[in-house]
Image 1 (cartoon, rainbow, N blue to C red):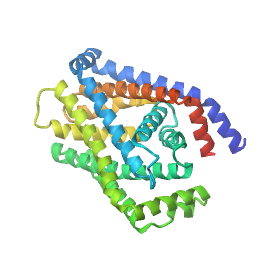
Image 2: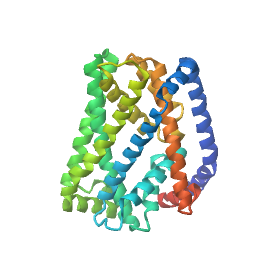
Image 3: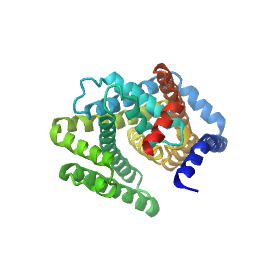
Image 4: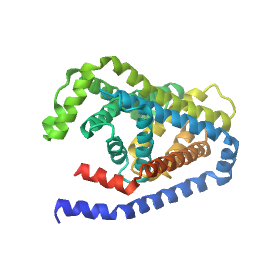
Length: 334
């Protein structure tokens, strides 16, 4: 079987893989609910109540700041308005959340959805650049969250080793990316000798050199994404557990775990089951009990589902379907 025919078979099987992934996630979700006690989860959701509206507002704000950061990554952005970036971001994120292609689909879809305002090469390089700054912010968040865990809970040797290793990787990653943006070595195009790759790399480095005045603003917006995510968990914790002097610390730690789960398992539709299991385990470690972690993750699943529906409706408003966009993503990959 040739590589092309194998790729076609994989595409044909993708609906089955999505269904299988969703089924496995649902089974894991049901298992975590059963082990923690469905009554406790339902009671926690009832206590959140109208607080879910604030969760939606904060999640919308997070999408908005990343969309704004993306729009700032375009050199000539007069025609690329914030509302266009926001609509494309929400729609693309919906595609990434409900397909197995995950970040590959969502990031490529952003470039596809803004072609009426930007040349595809400019769109792709801007998406890549925004993700570079997002990656820096994630590494900083992981470092802060790991430090909070180390100082707040003094873990045993096993978790301590893992935490220190994660922190070192995050710090080295930030330093390496910042060096690449400053020194501008043609590393990627040297290994992937393709005109599109070389063009995107040149555009990114040219932007960084010419628009240094925007870099701090872009990184600030990316960091605001994480601050609002911590605020969301802090809000939910105040509704779910008695007031504690450690609530902020716990919110930072739990958001760090959530970010790592999102990055590692973005290909799982809505991260159903995976998020509940991972958050439940971490909540147990920090003394909240697995039921609290599962409740937090279930609220996130509902929030992600809400924005996925909004994103798919935005696609329909544009006269597009998710299948059409995914096919275009696969064509670009080829």
